[in-house]
Length: 135
Image (cartoon, one colour):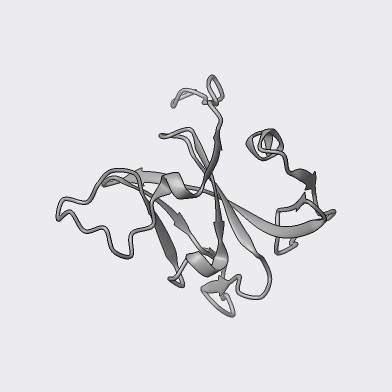
């Protein structure tokens, strides 16, 4: 949220639990419903889920629930890059995971690559928040 405010967005937080979006952004009168996700740096990409996963619930009606029609974008924070990315749902082409490329691919492919830099709206360094294991 800090990076989004720094980038000039107005922020609105939905009230109550189990809303499909975590945040609403406003810029120049336009509202954007955002689902916040944590990305992980793996093999030169920031990877994040583009669905809710309910497999850990006893007897789930569905293991995965998509966000199509319920949000406009994903707000992604990656602790390893400290980057905050705003990815329109239409750019997250898969149903389960999305990859944002940080490092060039080994095969030098550049067509159909989602570069993380194209979606980065800011950086946030969060330190000192982890509790040592075994505490």
